[in-house]
Image 1 (cartoon, protein in one colour):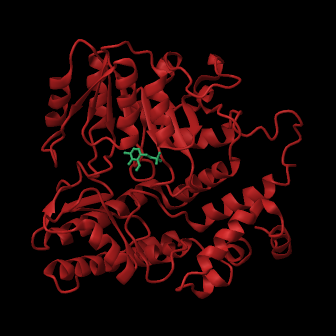
Image 2 (image 1 turned 45 degrees about the vertical axis):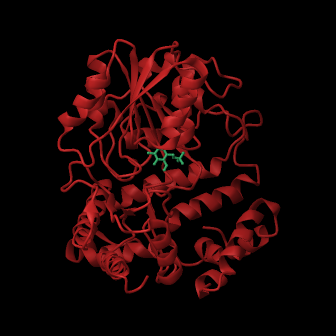
Image 3 (image 1 turned 180 degrees about the horizontal axis):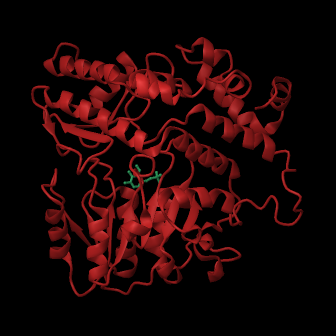
Length: 447
Ligand SMILES: Cc1ncc(COP(=O)(O)O)c(C=O)c1O
């Protein structure tokens, strides 16, 4: 932990000025509370830290455990954040690791190496890659730490040698960052995109596999699918899709932007050739970090999109894809702290909590008159994202209204559809509050 005097001294250096400005901006809002105006950053770095809840607490009173855990987050009282699908909020230990790393690294003395330090953005970063590899069930040399899922998605689409007329199959539910690199490739090089339309919700895994099979032609080279779709939160059968692709000699590429932190991952077992994920969503890491997995057996087939020294160093395996020029090592310190935070709670316990809250909110919104659940019932095709359609809802209007009236931040994925993300910082009482407000709004009472 940073000593108070050291911290206050460091405030005068340019290195953390952006963070000071951030703290000031944050505190200048009309509703700034004591914690913010008193210096949230100082409190995070210098003040006594809330203890993590204990195992005994979990065994005896799980709700009290989660309430205690909530103190690890910096949400202001009364605010409800239901848009984790876009971005998560980092817990205090992650913020602390991130900010402390900025302070430490900007002194530029944390290594004896006078040649390779501080060449951030050109290194192997094994001390950060190894815990990530262990967490996602991959080999160290199969992991590249990039800057977000979008970057990884572009790396794969741009890096493969495909000929005019070769085909990629993807689903209608791929994110813009998943589709766009292929659409550009289609326009530029004549690589053809075939889009399948997923059932919403799917009835079975086989139903999805049959759609892929129906789209396959002799020119198909690669199949791409989200692990958890952005728009409807549908958990697709990634393992089965990869097995089907392998059986037909196709490459498989899974966009797991939402998966890390939401559900357990074992990429070797999944059998995908390429996988990307965004730890700043559900793993609650600092923003600006992505993970690209390249199965070692296909690594040599992928060209670098960003080329600098080391672009042709195939011995470095996937580390070749993280040579992209100067970068921010402190987000990696925060990422490692996020993995430690997960280990301290237990990934299975986190997944269970996410799923239980999801089941709760799903059952509650489903009872609102006019609700059309887009998310599947049960757990097979869902995890932490619940999507529900209200044909008469002006979603944008509601989204603005509920934030400005009730400080509830929610987002939707169509003109009438809401996407509700549940995470470990939520509880059933606040989800019920949201549902009650939504019900009243739809009744016309509050609109
Ligand atoms: C399925 C999916 N893929 C890719 C992305 C892009 O992720 P990022 O913004 O981290 O690059 C998103 C973002 O929401 C997403 O939902």
